[in-house]
Image (cartoon, rainbow, N blue to C red; front, side, top):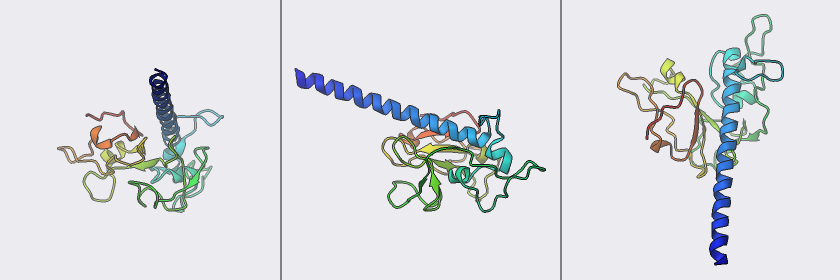
Length: 192
């Protein structure tokens, strides 16, 4: 009898922890999205965010934490350039060797990264539906932040299957496994 009760308590506790991890990761993804789009103030009202300052999406989360070499410092007169860091978060060096499903396309080893609740890096994915190596408007609209979720395997396909029109399409929920995904520019419309 006591063993049964103990098993139920442990099971409920694990469910509660998983629910907290999911919520914590969702909050982190939302903060990163807001740093990109500029919808959150930084104590002084609304901040323009990375996208408005730099004119493009970050290629990795590290772009929000450390100025990319190709981006100019902020120019007050023209109101453009990097004025980050755009997030205040513990940053850890990216180590690709030990991570399932991650590769150098998401960050350079040693770059700072923001971790999800499972202590794995969150990545930026911009699909390339037509495979030409240049993101078009549809690809940019489907840009997303992705956490590998509980199992630690990044399952969300980086390149979306093209829709009938040759534009990016939402990957199915099934193809994303237990990944936690937040779209930067559009509402999530993934289907099972």
